[in-house]
Image (cartoon, rainbow, N blue to C red; front, side, top):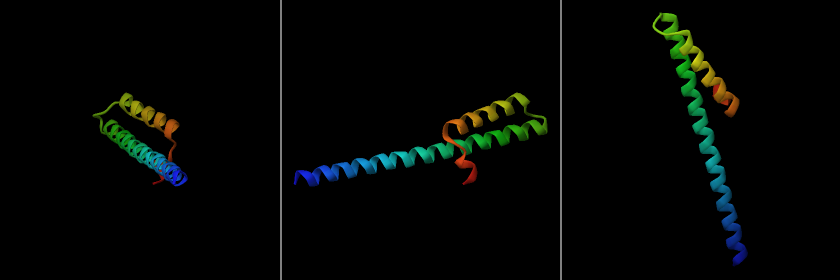
Length: 77
């Protein structure tokens, strides 16, 4: 009986770990999408004359930092 409980505990722990990883991936994808949207908005505002090159550059740097940390998979989905 103890062996069964140990295996069940290991399997439950594995499931929790996989679930947390999936949640982290989804959150990173959403954050990347949000940063990409902010970059687009900053660029659009700059082109219309109501934004600044500095704001566009800051948005680009934030996006590049996110990509360096989490990868660029969100760009393909």
